Image 1 (tube, helix red, strand yellow):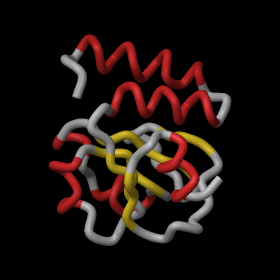
Image 2: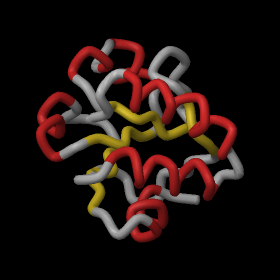
Image 3: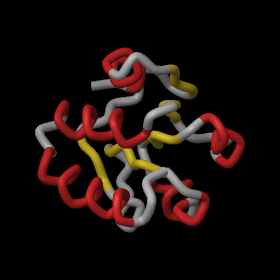
Image 4: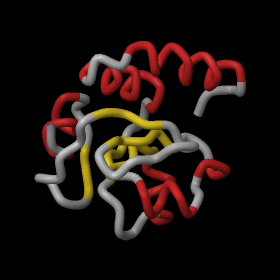
Length: 107
């Protein structure tokens, strides 16, 4: 699935290469060039995320931190990342990441 298709699926906008292929999701601790990563807080903006992520799902306020990345922009990060996880059959991933987001105050 490409960036444009993911953005369309969650009714969002994107920046970057609309044809870039994404095959799954990854955590900020283990970004991958074929995965989309959720960045919900400034503390998750790391060199690894910037340089190793295939795409980043983030809020409008963080766009300027990623001038060269493929981005999907969301006003509702938790809901949209859950939808993306289900799209890739990775609900298990959302169950782990989503619960930690809720415990830490969400996005």
